[in-house]
Image (cartoon, rainbow, N blue to C red; front, side, top):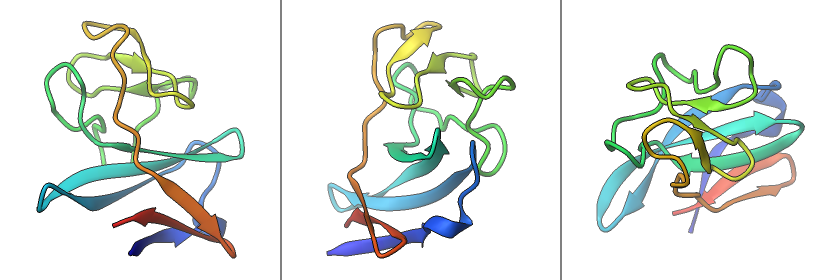
Length: 110
């Protein structure tokens, strides 16, 4: 079963949308980002401490817009791959969430 996240037209460059997915019969925070005209989605959990990455609602990018940034310790992650390139969890990776775009609507697997 698919879960609608948003319409693709709602997304601007460097924007993010928070949503939740069911994982092991519990809701898991997740987020969708729009970066270089592509969508990527990850569980909203830093591999270092498990805290949510965003420091404000739907704000996931570093100030320069090049990386996703952890609100707790500033770790930086590549938006396209989720790999940590700076901080205490270098080499770790955000957990990807499968998404699909169908007729201008972004869905994830539920």
